[in-house]
Image (cartoon, rainbow, N blue to C red; front, side, top):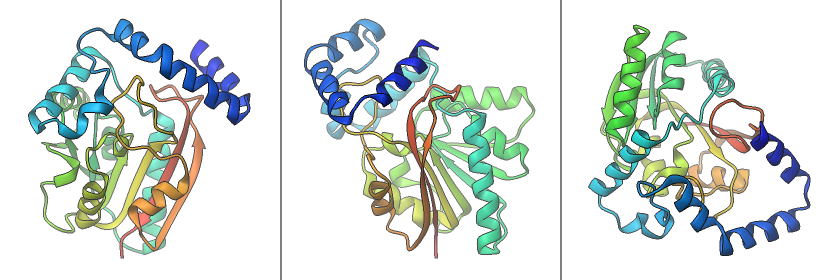
Length: 254
């Protein structure tokens, strides 16, 4: 509740004042605050190191996140938004949609919602620990989902394997944005649905974000698809871990 109140207050401030306060925090307080809050498992200098980390170190870092921190950015509002976008994609393209690949499934919230809605869902995540938790959760509700460990930059499926790709609160975590986008476009038959925070780069933050989208144009340009819809949404009232402004993108694959 206090965090939501702070976000609402911050949004009322002039952009120049918000930027000034952020600069002061980054310079004097942010790094020390993160180390004190999370301890040794959290890589406070992630944005300085991620480009040179091995795949093994990358996997280990995200496993540590899931072992030490509950990280479900999605809530029911997000799942409803995605399901509506899938339905609209079916109507607009007049193509059947049955098979969905979720990239960065995390705790499995969206994957379970899509499966309950009647879709056949496959999940890809870099973290074996996240997949273990998600699979255990789905099994508890007798929900069948296919789970696969791997990197978004190198999706381990053939071309045009899935009608729709969903990627919610994950694109901001990838090491190579261009490679990830190309991989998503390669395996999608109909549409790509993306939800990312609307953020500017900050060196120190309570996440492992590596890619930053400060405007709709950043996301539109990244995919380069001729047919798309992109809107800004306000997630401050959401119950998931992420609370703030976000960008919601639906791109149609020709």
